[in-house]
Image (cartoon, rainbow, N blue to C red):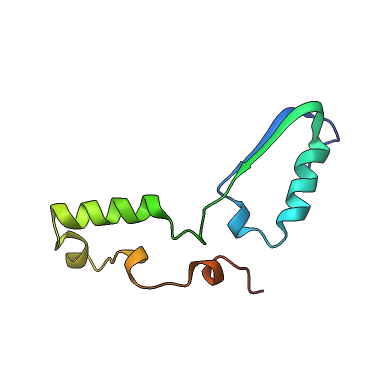
Length: 92
C-alpha cells in the first residue's frame, strides 16, 4: 500500500480476500500501515460454506417469481453444483 508505516488507527478489508493473489502479504501490509494499538480487521466470502445468504436470496426470489431470472438469462449460482472452494482459489 502506498502509505507510510503506522499511518492509520484502523485498517479493514471487506470481501477482498478471495480476490487477492497473496492474502498473507495483504494482511502484513494492513498491519504495517496501522498504528501500534490500532485495529486491523477483515471479512471474506465463505466460499467453502456455499454462500448461504446468496442461496436464501435466490431461492426466495425464485419462490416469488420462478421465471424472473430465467427471462433475463440469469441463474441461481448456488444451485449449479459449483465447487466453491476451487472457484475461490487463484489460478494464476
